[in-house]
Length: 288
Image (tube, rainbow, N blue to C red; front, side, top):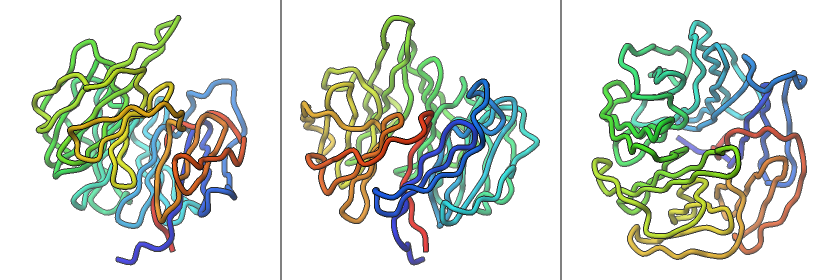
């Protein structure tokens, strides 16, 4: 399959979708702002795989929509669900979405139809990714759950941890995140080579988000980032980066709240736009 050109996509409150092909010019589609951001059209996560963007979310519903280019979308592809979806990922021919009270759904036809699962995750799923032949879902109460097929899950919860997302590279899994406690953030970061045993990350900081990009594994921190090129030796860099950031075809594109960034390197990132706030998720894909 020809990949086409990179498209960076962000989603968020009130059906917010914004996309760019150069990191400079952003197109926007969204519904009018409402009294609260927890609405049926809330988009909590977006992923890309096999030629499709899939966005998921909702409130007391299971919103799923898909697009091949980020511009035209099919909506309400899973209208019967009564629980929001917080994460979505593609792997080995299957899309998997996780969400409220541990619900899981999957699609084997690129998001056109979805199947509900009777088996649930140990806690609400806020994020899911696929790498190294497995799905890894994370969420509330330090939940980490592992699955080979997106249907049967093994509980690897880390009690007391705050886990918001996960990433894989160089044989190493990283799961990290933070949560506001009313006066500050509680933050956690754990690593694993096999998704069975998890230990604390070998660096300190207020952890925000792990991600793999440009052949490196990163953890965005409150004031800088940690990075490894082998999964073993980590370097902490005292340079702020957007917590949502991805790389394709020689270009870094990122988002932080209402601000967007682009640059040929992390050192060259520049703010290029201030737009609507309420961004919830960020992904890069490819489109014709």
